Length: 155
Image 1 (cartoon, rainbow, N blue to C red):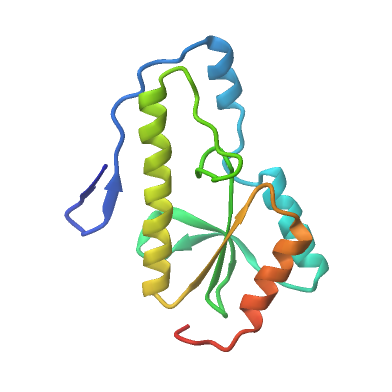
Image 2: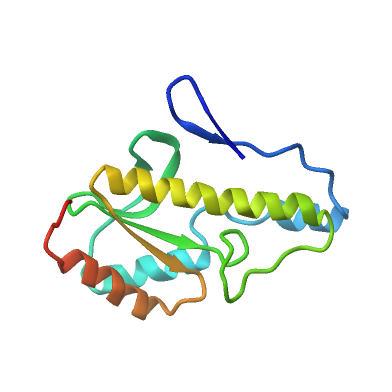
């Protein structure tokens, strides 16, 4: 699932996609947002309304192709808003029936990449907060605020 590059960075690779199961699905997936999703924007608005200021799409140190959805660089707090499907939510995650073996590996690769990102950030002194897309933004603000107000243990 992963291999090391010359620079020591793990690469998460996938076999080639077996091809779309239908043209309609191809079009639907091509329209999905990769950033500024509705749950992400809702959380950002709620954080801003709570008086918290942050950076968006902040680069993960040591992982140039990865970014933090919502970052508090001074406090070294990284907030990710994870989609239930793409990141394997234990409550709402689903598995497609078409090309199921490929999708199973793809979603497992996403989860492994998330774990690697958490570890890289933790090793760099960051605290990671992961919010599921189905979580209430106001409750999520409470979780983020709690982390931001904790003493900087190891951060």
